[in-house]
Each structure stands twice: as C-alpha cells, then as structure tokens.
Amino acid sequence: MLRVTAHVPAAKAKGVPFDTVTLAHDERRLRRKLLTLPKAGEIYLDFADTITLDHGDRLVLEDGRLIAIHAADEPVYEIRGRDAAHIAKLAWHLGNRHLPAQIEKSRILIRRDPIIRDMLIGLGASIFETNDHFSPEHGAYHAHGDQGHALSAR
Image (cartoon, rainbow, N blue to C red; front, side, top):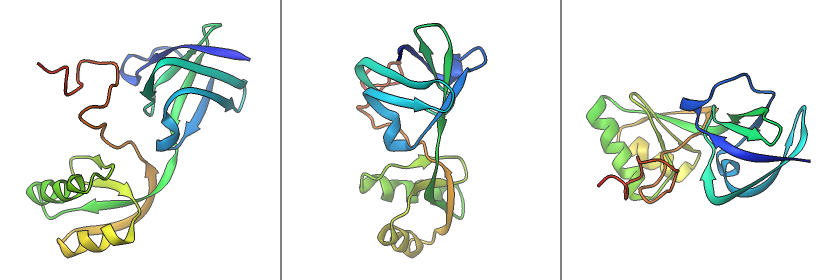
C-alpha cells in the first residue's frame, strides 16, 4: 500500500494526476485515513494535523505520482436572492445558525434542510434543489495551512 507524503492545494498543483478520488464534504476533512482509488487501490494518508482537502487539490504519493481530489456532487439547496445585499442578509441568517455554506457571488449552497428552506423562503429567497460540488467556507478558527486563517491575519 502506498503512503501519501504531501498535500498540494489546487492553486499550486502541477502535473497530470495518476488517479482521482471523489469525496463528499465530510470525507474531505481528515487527518488519518485509508482511501480506495479506482486505479491505484488503497493509499494511506497520515498527516500531523487535520486538513481539509478541496476540489482540485493533489495528494503526492511516496513514489511521486499525484492523486487528484474531486468534490462529490451532493444534494444541496441553491439559494438566490434579489440582489447582493439580499444575498448578504441570507448568508448572515445561515451563519447565525452555524450552517456550513458555500458562498458565491450570485448564490449560496447549503445541505438540504426543509426547516432552513422554509426560513429562507420566508426571507424572500429563491430555493432550488440540485446536486453540486459542496465546498463550504472554512470557519474562522479552521487551520488550513496558509496565512489566510483568521488568527494569522495580524
């Protein structure tokens, strides 16, 4: 079984991956895990700290080959507002409930939850059920190995 020796963020990833592993949002936050790949069989990942793998990231195997991380399509709500200010208001309400949310320029994605859907509709949002990659924002105290971390921005 091959071991993973490094994690490379998507923005710095170079080279063609040998294989790909598709993982849901909850499966991409890990420290130690055995992963099964379509081509390479099992690989073992054991990092010193917990990390979150994002769509497009790469894992480097001990033999130098690259494994691409693919975010699985998950059942989510696509939330749209009337304008940017309305989307910001909707995002505030979601954050106030500590819900994982993927915030984009013209939409927000959250896991499907009928109670939250009804709240958002009551706030004037348009809600669409879809399946999409789900990569929510990392929390303020989430360590992700870069200087963009809330506590590092001093």
